[in-house]
Length: 497
Image (cartoon, rainbow, N blue to C red; front, side, top):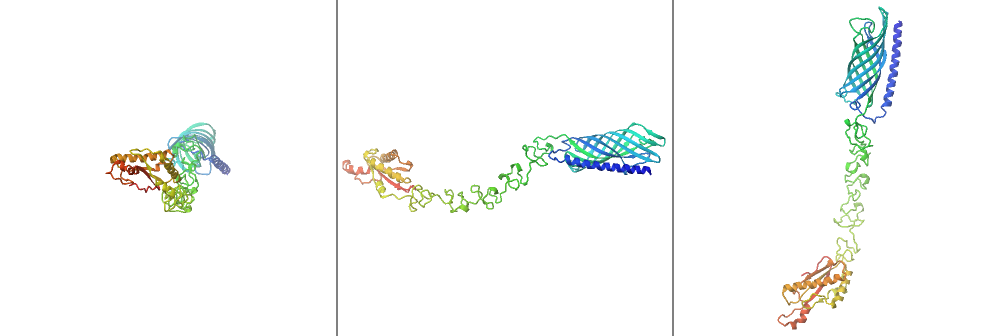
């Protein structure tokens, strides 16, 4: 009766001890796994330290406690080294105590255990290495340092010895973070000695060791970009420094649009890459945040609003929505009318001079200018030099050209019939050029609007009787040695015949 009471008390003490161990273990797990920024796996953090409490159960000549509520106590540490995804090697150092009483015999045996072992992991080859639950098998061997005490049929005993031992077992690892895990395992120890209970028979004494504790991964894997995810599993190994990453080492993408937050101008709204990660509902290439018409396709030039005629003024502001392509418009979308004559510049032949629609935007020549243009510049026989007497006329033409800056002046050269046709053609061209040169010398604006033509002897002003002598035809021929003018609008609808 006394023995049973003692065992019950021991069991209650062990249960209380294990309860405290569980509570402490979970508290440490919470504290050590609070920082999840450091990411690694066994392949990166190859050394693992385990600290655990143990419960021992005896099986021998006095009887056995296997899988019963009678347990001894103990604890230990293990230092494990990663070999491959399937295997770890470990050094296990532990201490335990086991007691048993029966039929007047009793034992109180203390064990120090130094073992080497291999752990065959189901996580890493069958399950994922970072799975929360990881089953494993373990085998190994080493030495027991034994101090048995008690009473046997032969009397009291107290001695020390060393025994060889082998073990095999199974366990579960619970992964709380890449640094911290909890494990529970059971090992069956098979010894080379039958004196643990001071009773010898044909079967050596055996033990069950139940362990529960915490594992801590040590070391750090290579992390080129310094984002906390080791290169071995970093899917984005070139992440810029300081960028927040996910468990795969890739930049966080809150809205899942393929544009990482550090590059995303709209990190909480799914968008498109070419718009900095911002949405574009109407698909016009202008981000909604910059689009004044986010539900109507438009252009970048009109801040996302439609522009039917492509003049750069959105339809909502365009008072002339059908302006021809390429026409310069004002803020209201209507063609520019620089001279304010009611004829838009794109239709106005004289955009800088007010005219009328009938004259295509050009001013009508006044009577004085029309009369001036009808004047002629006469030339000496076989000469292309402008005579001084005509300088006042030409100066007046310069003034008229200034009054009508958009008009074109056709300068028409002529010759009399004396000489060959070829010679007279060249001479008429020279006379027209001489007048043009004078006008340019006098400062005509935009001299490109001075056009010269030579007509030779083909357009005489006075018909000459060629059968008469030169003396008798001199006055008529002098009328034909001339330069005349024609002034018209820039559309060059001039008489060039």
